[in-house]
Length: 275
Image (cartoon, rainbow, N blue to C red):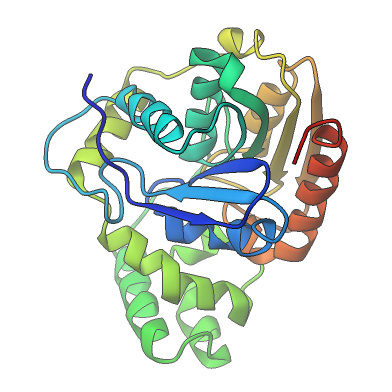
């Protein structure tokens, strides 16, 4: 398979952390991690094939993301790294650890699962209409309390977050909407194809021996906490944290707590490595 050239944001110096976004998403949506982690480590945040500025109109399979990522690591002379993956990015992180275990020193998995299951309520046309209004209005009146109360909490945002703070709506305005608009139909088709085939790699991830940190949100309806914790139970060397009163975008809801937990885990598991 021919690798696709990925638009990539590289920051900082030190042991490399490959940061993989979800769907819809882009490397920019990982800035909640890279802005801080790059102060101590080197962060590499690509736009995956079909997302952000790594655009393509050609159909592709999910496995081709792995080809792209290994090519990126080779191009950057990265022999081994920690892979941090959010949602779809977490699935790809696990797949990368299975495909090239010697290249993955550790996994940080957020709101993801090897057998992802959702519990999202049915979506009505009113939900979509209110979400469009909330998203557009939030581009003008970013994080305004009246907007959050009147539109945000009545839109589909209510399933993505539990804590409707101005900080969350700032991220939605500056990163979320752009990522949604720049996610190609080919990327959506690749993901839907994999899910329609009943993606379940629980038995395979049991062979992953590197240290793993699994972070989940108690009220996540996109990838349930139960499915995240089920995946965590398959790893031989895993630390788990499930945050209450949060949903799928919990790194934007409680960023300080999440980053503190990630940094503490990294300090322990990378302490014996040359940084």
